[in-house]
Image 1 (spheres, rainbow, N blue to C red):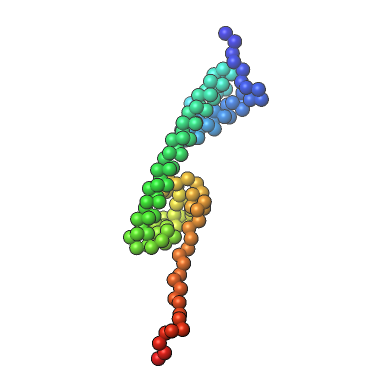
Image 2: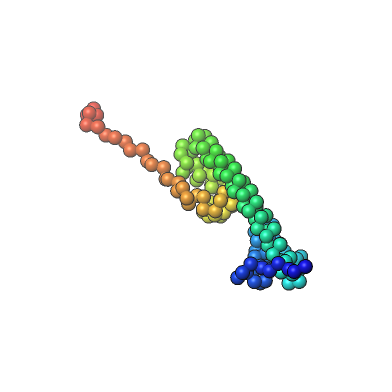
Length: 144
């Protein structure tokens, strides 16, 4: 039985590195238990293909989880605004201030992590600072 060769331009080391990195992306740990150096080209290729399918599933699941987190976060912002914050910017500031952790108050990435939001979510749609109400003065005001 002849072994299947790795794709053109994809040598053994590239395949080993791919498996090493993709496994960590999916599982959060490096596959130190796999002896990649002793695997045949066919085993490396099969493992890489299997991880590619698993990676696609993992990324889809992660995207669905992030979408649910966005909906929940937006509901929390709306609820906070309706409970007295008045607007999105103030509601966000109140949510940040509610955390004891100083990093959550000033670090967007960490705050997004705490709420399961995708990286950069708060930067994509900048929160506007509340506009101050302007008092209009009219000439028809009674004189003292």
